[in-house]
View 1 (cartoon, one colour):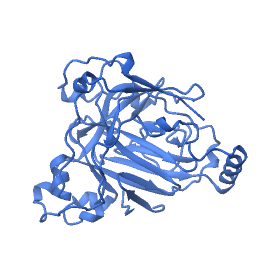
View 2 (cartoon, rainbow, N blue to C red):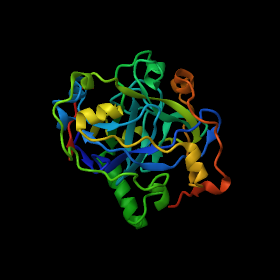
View 3 (cartoon, rainbow, N blue to C red):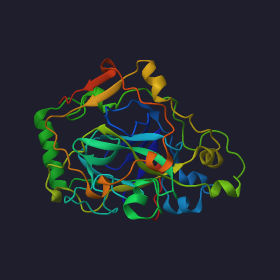
View 4 (cartoon, helix red, strand yellow):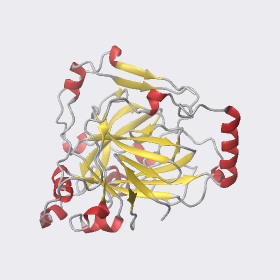
Length: 351
């Protein structure tokens, strides 16, 4: 379905000039509301089709990409786009914006997508009032995922992305408006260069080409049946999910591209790809002790979406798995950086 999706380094390139990166970060405490945590580098991505002899059969059927995550590890999604696009984000085929079941159509009531490049990132599920609950990886089968709590079953796991472009007439109007404004190509519409780069931080490890490195003999059967991972809800942070100010019929009715991202455990990643998974991220105490930055992003002109009903009652993963973290010590005010609001092909499958 849809057009070509490619891996470029550690980024996914979707049709229409849309780029998505899965970013590593610190896991927030589940009490209180916090600033944006730092980016600790992008997760590596590999094509499922490159490991047809070792990837689980279900993954081969669904196609897409895989990335390695540790249990309880947090992530956020970084977006960029060359032109306006509507991007749906699913967690176990539950919409991370509306809390409704996955749909192949855009909806406005409630809105089931984010608007690019207006939305520079998404760190978790929409919890309303200018906040989100952080994406945190947990195994399927415990009931702790957003999918399990909202739908009552854990079938899909992973992350689903689907993009829609503007119809020809609205796109032509947008291009004409850009020409009239003579927008500088050095910036990203409405977002400063520092904000466009994400919450900060250079990649913690260099991305390599899909399938690079030595490939071991086929993995044992146990690797093929390793537990799948999904995303649960973690701590709350300040982040707006912006409403769309365009008429719904400005967007195409059919997606231009989509991709299923499978979350592999560290042992599963090694067994499938032959590569070691990145080490577990630094803990919050060590990060704060080093005086490293956290981030705050506020847009006074943004129209934040209200809390999504089905997502409002999702319980954090600590309620299911217990809290294994040291007591929270908040960052000093001087550590919080305020961000302004200045003006290879992936195969798809059945899911």
